[in-house]
Length: 458
Ligand SMILES: [Zn+2]
Image 1 (tube, protein in one colour):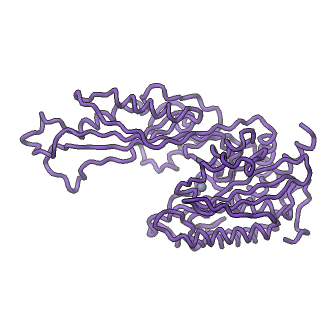
Image 2 (cartoon, protein in one colour):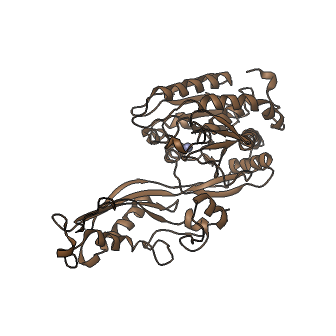
Image 3 (cartoon, protein in one colour):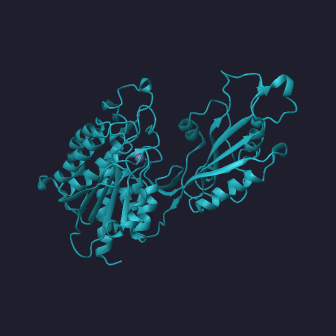
């Protein structure tokens, strides 16, 4: 790193970021050309290749202390450290992940998923937004300061976020390593391009399987239908009790609070969800309440005869998998139990259901009153020119809880270079240079403001 490019640590980072953008773009293209998919059945070499490329880039950005955490059953985790420049400077942990979702049906892509392709104002490739854009944004901040930002830095770049990783549970077992004053979890982005957004809540998730067996085997629907207990009808009757006539969740006790932050308009949400013209949305109340600070239950799978292979027979066995999303602060076991008990209390046509609880994942709600939030709000406003919105997300980032347990007093900031129109996990994922540029500016301004706040002794 040529130190002469480095910005004045107390000044406007924009000019330095302007100069860095070409290099950041080409590094993002190199990184996104590597199919670093950490799912079973995909080769491990590209994941290692992405890891090696990033280690090299971090060294080039002035990070001297870098090690790789090789934990069982997961991809290598890059851990880097830059000590605080002065004893009173805070330490900021920077998180993102370098693995990507599989590309899915490649025929739906307008260009090959691992050939980063220029589009208007940005680039298209699998993982170029989620989450390689944010890996590069962290790198941009480090470069802008010539590897010597005004805060101590800990870097955690994970390589198996998308599939799920035992690393989620690791940080509390090694808390010294993850000790910090604030973390920037950059695996997210803006509500819409140009709208700076801090995500302050993540809903929790739980799965439940519900099953019913009524006959030894299928029986002729002409001879037996009408009296033989039909497993599929029993299941459908049970599933129909999960929502009321408006489409709101009807399971008692699942927490639902008013949402006080920003949110989508109905039109934006329709567009994002691809809702067919003329159809209503489900549920009542604000979208924030329905999507973020209240519960949702989705039937995500059904084991029943398929239409194509359907025989004229009463169905003997049916099974459904339910995905429950719940309020960020509700206890996962409690939320799951409420759904399990609701289902067990049902007796459609007098028939009991077999209900099996599955995985749970806790939600997360950030406390937003501390110095890191103050610094981040100022930084996002500086970068995008408008006040930051607070949103939550239905998606979960399980590692956030692990990191928060390891560093319970650290403020947790969730922002980054993705945006809600970037097609993450879908065909034709893309990132916008405007968002990447502003995110690098925001990260630079954040560490500057945060360090200044510590110096002033507050
Ligand atoms: Zn991600």
